[in-house]
Length: 147
Image 1: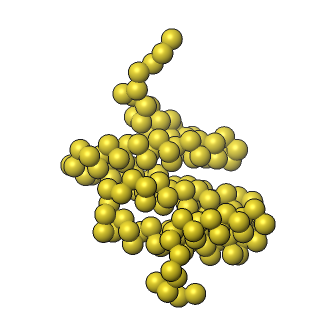
Image 2: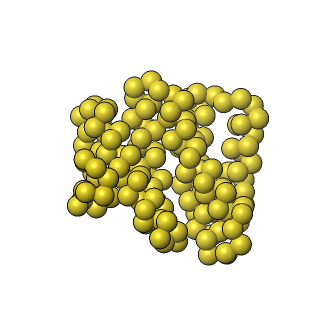
């Protein structure tokens, strides 16, 4: 399939990727998740505030990370978790649009949990772990605490 020829939506492509992931057809799962990422990046290049597309883009990366983790490609899995996380950190830290910063902060909350879980299974260096913990504090600092 050539990119752009597919008439499916990114959600349909993700669903197909999930089907192949569940069937342990790794090559097809990878291909469909990468296609969904490409489709979502096209959407986000035109509308960077589309929350559903950001969430889908993050989800496609996380699904790809799960697939890589299942086949033992841990560096690739970590890379797929870091890409959306670092992208959202960049938007949060370098964009002056408060709406986009809020969207990025919400996205960071989505990207942190799988990264921290991955770090608990496959511990990174101490410095990287400290950075993740600091980012978690940043992401959740404004939320009320209930006792």
